[in-house]
Image (cartoon, rainbow, N blue to C red):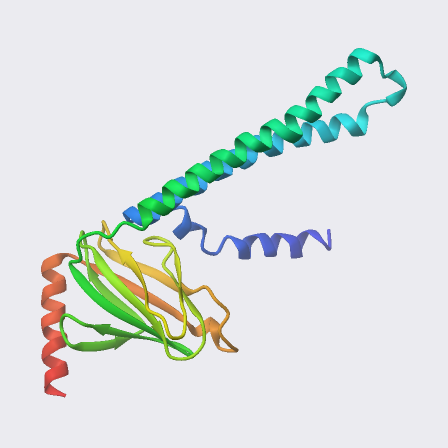
Length: 228
């Protein structure tokens, strides 16, 4: 019983981001979600026969072996150890290449935002409007938002589970990720790369507003920036 509680807590900690990962709200996250389930099912396809063979080996008495049984076992080894891995790994390769091609496509840009990682906060620059914010990204719904990622110090990793995959911020390079929120709401983001003692502080939020609401918000933010 003393071991059950710590193991249960570890499992619960591992589910902290499950709602975001398994609940995509944008096309990129939906594609990643689909690929994840396909790979999971392929993993089950491998795991189930391997487990069955393991149980068979554990409980099978070698004293009862016969020539026909050894022939069956040989076929199982060849099929399970050679044929199935080739089929499964080929499927994984094809699915991964397909997803890489799909996710590398460049959609039409409706809005460009620069995100710069610092120890330990996020600097947000609205290139099209001329003002900055921190730790909070506001975007319009149903628009393709290009987020250009840079870092001023160490490697960070931009991860927004409900809208996109993980993209690293590498010193000296500019990477990019696309966001397209289908629904208005607040989406929680994280730094997925350990970047120092205060790494846990590097959370951020993406607020998706309807297009008219976003324009009103951006206009007010631009006026405040001009007045300061």
